[in-house]
Length: 490
Image 1 (cartoon, rainbow, N blue to C red):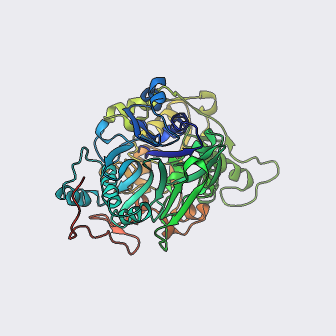
Image 2 (cartoon, rainbow, N blue to C red):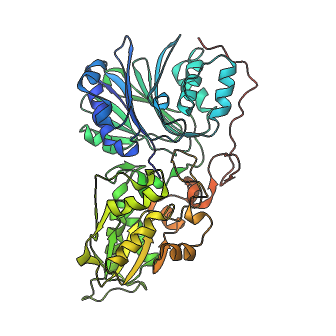
Image 3 (cartoon, rainbow, N blue to C red):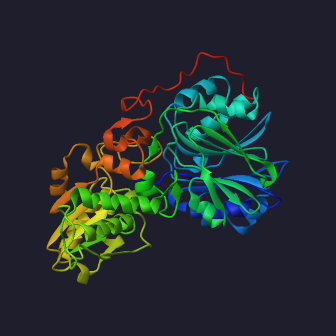
């Protein structure tokens, strides 16, 4: 799996937005490493700088100095729709008769091709194959005939899928979250203005205060000169479809998403993991860094009760928590290695065992997921080669059985080990002594949500959006596109 994108927007009182946006993008770098960009507006014209690569490589001092204006948006991208090249890098900029637009998008549209075909037939010229440009063109078309709020509502009624957007319309900054709230977006207050960001960690980086999450289906318009923000609830669905994997993997542990601190959610998921499938071993250790909070919660729960659920004796400390694997932080992520052989080799480069923690002991190793099974197989073998007597694997989320269509670059069903194998078969394939996943109900309980208010498509195969060839978990259908006369692109 790879991260989704990260978006940010700021409106300040007399201070250029470029550097605050730059720092905020650094805080969101974990959400995308393919490209980075900033669009600002100085009240007279729009300025843009977008480059491939990491934030620190994409911007120099001169680039930031050229991005004048107190209002702007930024984006870090890992591609989930569109090509891996500069044509799909964001923010996407467009100028038209009613002004200029900049648009940053986190998520993925289901019906982008349908809308693109319709707009192209009306004379709109597209420069990329990404879905972000589709949103920009549709919004620009609506702005030719409607005010800002009505134009956004009109576009929301046509696009179907997951999206959190930060947008500049001239020097006005706005944020939009899709009606099911699949992708995160929050509001922050700064000393001299307001901001929008995918995660609250970006607000913390700018010494701001988290105000609240943008509500599903809400449009937030930041007032000029950073004086405040206006809210418009444009769509109000009965149920949400929050992505549970934000809390399991994608978000930074120090972020607050949908009123839940991600670190505490992961610790509580670890506690549930012990309650559901705890095993008495000498040591419990995380796969760094993704399994650390889960393992911490798991060990805490294990210190209170036995694996059978009975209270511990006073002299029984339970399962010891220990760091048994050290991470080489200068090795790229194994899941973005292009070949299977490289992924297998990278595991050995990435993780080094601490022999004294492992040798002659029974070990429980905890991670957030098993995707292809490559890393888990190599990891179990690594621990056994280091002298572990038993290796038990526990996963702080349900098994991933289906791809994600909502903005996560996840493997296909052919590549997902759990798509056609039982837990017992996966255990045998990775050569673990035991394997258990967390239940879907436990995830919902920890997040304080009903299952119907979460997007669980990757672990159930049933989706909250109308996707060709897939089952849905609710009564939902995509908007009808076509059959109306569109104005030509100016």
